[in-house]
Structure formats: structure tokens, C-alpha cells
Length: 390
Image 1: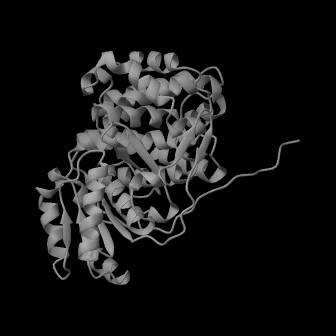
Image 2: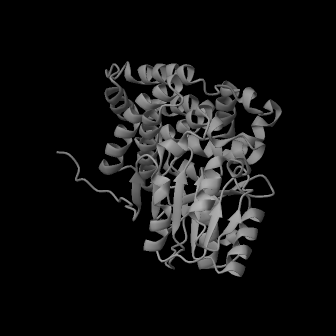
């Protein structure tokens, strides 16, 4: 007799508008939220774009506070500066134009404004091998409106990571931090290079794959992850072949959104644990780190997750026999990397091989290990994985 179904699932209160020129809905969505003093966030690269000028024009009726220099992985100093500006300007909504670093900065700012300083006191705490303590936040947070410009899905999730001066990442989770409004605009997304969209899509793809074997998975996240997996397979190849096709961009944004919904409840595992350390240590772009590490993390976990690999293989139309599914999925992933031109080696994204041992030791203290299906027993296992990726 099968055991009874038992699971927990985190649903979100997010409004999604997906259509060409969805960005034009920004003023009306701000009015619906009764926002009077928004803060606009973006990276230096995005601040130089015509899209940023368009968003500025759309926000002209409001007194807007701008932060247009958010760095990759953000930083504690950046968040402190944003909190101070938000208090001075009495900001009551946050508008994100960009990807994960911009969204995480907005989430961290909203968290500190509601729960108090310093930021670090609100971080989740991981005790190996499998204990995660996440503060129970109950205060209302400022609404976040996001225009996603990458395929990371960060705008959907209630989680975030902020880089410290010491080269580590503080991780946080609060259901109230997911974006209240998401404007998925495939025309606007054409302002981003296809190469960046494809690298960040490897992050979203990893959300789906890890979600299928996370200890925190559920039937709901399984369904979202499988559909996301199929969407990434189609859309990543389409974007690679037709970089300026807005329909391909739209499908990629939808797949990324599904992946964010998976991460919001199933959480992340070993793969993201490694990528967080690489990003915090070397400043490697999160998409690039995901592109390189995903097959190696999947290969490490494969012996513990035959059922998940069979589900992936079935969704992708690959051989599903127990002895073939794992190799079939890994072969598919290798072909997808080649077809999309994403990085495949750590040496190519600025990682110093001499520091891999230190990275391996830091991975042992990452929260993602708590949800990983295979127990990580030593830093040597992680060093072997990293050397294979180098």
C-alpha cells in the first residue's frame, strides 16, 4: 500500500502581465497599489539603455528615487544605501528593471525597512547536515513591481542572496518579498543580449531540475518543474537560433517564471549551493556559474534520484528506462549547452583553480545542502566536482 500524500506548498500573491509592451502597464499598476513615491532600481548597464529612459518617462508623474548602479550579486553596502534613501524619500514601492541582483536588492531593502537593521540578523541559518532555521517574518513589506530582463525567475521568488565584504552570501526567505506585479514584456526583453538570456536561463533550468528531486518538492512543484523543463528546452534553442524573435523571448520568460514558482516552494539544492559560493568568492555571474555547474551537480546526485531523472527524460522525450534515463538527460544537457553557447568550464569564467579547495569547504556551510537528496559527506567530494568543472 502506498504511503499517504503529505507535503507543504508555498503559493504567492503575484499578478503577472505577459504581453508585448507590457511595460506600458507600469503607471496603472502603480496606481492600483496606491504608490506615491516609488524607487526605481537597475544596474549600470541597464541605466544606459533606451528601455530605462522609457521607464523613466512612464514614471514621470511620480517623484522617483533612482538607484541605477546595483552591482552583480548586490552587496550589504548597496542595501544599506538603498534603505537610507528609501527612508529619506519616504519610498512606498520598489520598481525593479533587471535580473536577480536588482530584484534581490529590492527584496533586501523591503526586508530591512519592515524588520529593522542590520540586514544580517534576518539571514537563514544552516547547521550541517540538514537543519535550516528561517526567521518567521510577519510584518508587511513594501510592494515590489518587476520588469524581468533575465531568465533567472528571481522576481517570482521570496528568497534572495546578498554578497558580504568577506566574500560570502547571506541568504534570506520571506513569502512577502515576492513581486506583487510582474510585467513580462518580450519586446522590452530584446534590449538584453541573447547570450545573457541564455546563460541566466541555465539558472531557471536548474530551478526546475533541482525542484524535481529536492527534499522539499511536492506534486505541485513537480508539475510546474516539468512544464518549465519543456519550456526551457524549446525556448532556449529558439532564442539561440533567432535572437531577435520576441515570441521566443516570451516563451523563455514564461519558462523562467515557472522555474521561480518551483524555487519558491521546493527550494534549491547542491547545485545552487556551489553557484552561490562561486559568485560570492569570484564575482562570477550567477547565470555563468549555473551553466557550468549544472551537469556536474546533476551527475553527483544521479545515483540518489533515478525516479526524478526518469521524469525529466519523459518530459523531454528521451529514453526513460531506469538504466538509460540519467545518461540521456546528461547528454541532452550537454547538447543544450553546445546549442546555446553558454560557458561550460570554470576556467573560462574567471575561477582560479588554486582556490577550489576553499570553495569546496565553504559549500559545506550552504543552506542548499539541507534539501539535497544525496548527503555531501566531505569537502573532497566538492573539490572533485569543482575540478571536473574546471
